[in-house]
Image 1 (cartoon, rainbow, N blue to C red):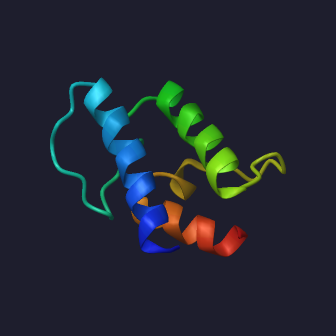
Image 2: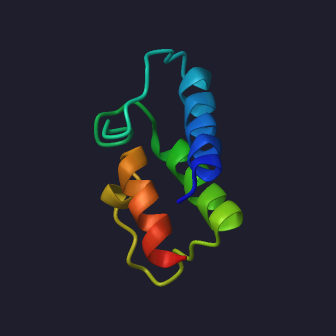
Length: 82
């Protein structure tokens, strides 16, 4: 994943966190969903964003929350499926 893509993804997540009144910093290895920082509705929005922005296909039924729980995990997912 290039720097611009990672910055865009980080901005998307930070906007989602801010909409939940969460203004704490975001580490690349920090849990977003398992920790409860973001909810399942936000997860679905993120999944749609990953599909549209990065061409990731989740229709094959292999989705697990761990794939999108951290920025590092999303970066690895995008790199693996591009």
